[in-house]
Image (tube, rainbow, N blue to C red; front, side, top):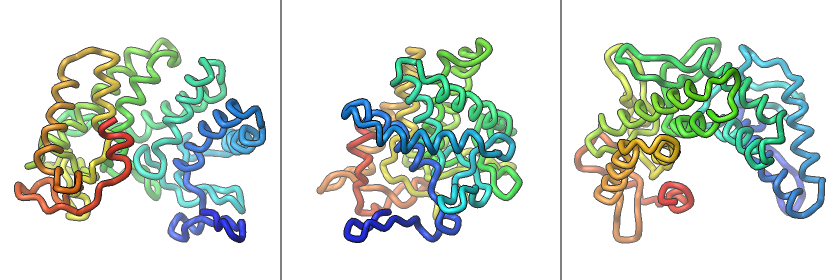
Length: 287
């Protein structure tokens, strides 16, 4: 955050002792490169490339990028790795930086490929019921929980399949499809046919939210985005059907007089609205 009057910048106190957040500076990476391209001013490009060079030199536990980086010490914050909240768009934008460069930014592609290999080795697991999910690495162990935000990764894996190492395009397309199926199950196993904020894979419980604080749906786009990518790459009609199911459920349970609202419990057949229409509903979910 920047105070526009004083020019002083700071991070949230909860972000591992005031660390910067991987997803945030990862997202700015692509935006700043494009800003330099549009303006001819290399200042923005140099800022983010400096960060990229530092990241390349740093040791990463198990090859994984933790979600927090302290801007004062240059060291990682707590070792928490997620492809969902706090981490998601860092990986997405490495891939998109390579695509936007007309596939000439080989450094971005290498960082993406290295990251995906580590994620597949340490975070991606298969449940007893045969569902592929992406867990979160916390304090030295894998938490068998997947967030709605992490569901974007099905589409990302499909998008990154072309150009992947060792002729593994088919493998990554299939992995993206497996993630899409898991995320669809998280929707299908609710009363409203809308997915919860996060869902667990613990013993008998699979693709279902356990805690009340994780049962809400706030018009998020990630699952529908993955359907869209998988439809584009495979033309399998199931993805259009799944997208249509979600559209009907949003129309039925989220539409209110003033627009659309999130719901507090997707497992309740009589939903309570949260009275908020998130900006990303128009910018992403409907888009």
